[in-house]
Length: 313
Image: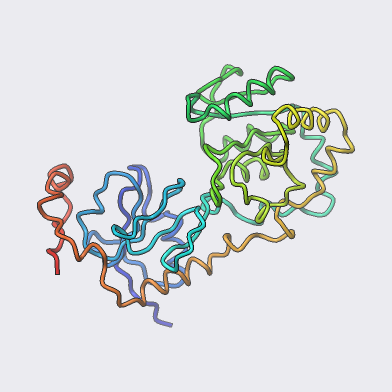
């Protein structure tokens, strides 16, 4: 079977991002003949250096943050947000690092977990500033009740820093009963890797973030900040679970996924079908309608290897 050839590129991702190993490229190659080129017909771009503005092709905006797409700049978008627009696909950031089978508990698995859990609770954060105040304040409150091991660059109290690499983080989390999994902010749809990192290590996540998280994850398998009338009440519940083995086991027995099956967001067919629609569309790219040359000569000066954009047509 001949697969459709697609001239594709990625732009404005961080410098260490490997295009060949990109999450989306790997999925797209299951259905399409993806040719990575600097003269693409389709471009997936992030929010980095704005180099994408040099191109007049069809553009798909991707963000792991809570930003909303600007359809005056992009033709399609992929983000964590719920956006009621056929040009948008919700792919929460946790999907990019999650193998759904890793969160499916095996029969009797809960009986083995308590033997591994020799420590109370852990926390990792890179920043402790105004934007992360809710997260850091909660850490301090819980830490006053019982020590929480903090192994990030900020608020470190263990004497070493755990790299923010999946395997290193997983190994650090495994001995802990609880894990503070606080998002940067609470926004519908915005669920990063923090919650699933705790679940993968079989911790009980203490979660703050997406108010609709229970639509995808079983609320009986973790502690949701939104479910408690106060932080003191949440901390009291944590301490109660820590003291009561039977109560702790109740959480361990619960499946992580709502309905005990991976949410639709984890289905790669959704992504492939979305791109199928993009690659089949005859719509004129938004960027091709705009004059790019004069406005973005500074970008060209900083990135001289890039081709000049096509003139407006």
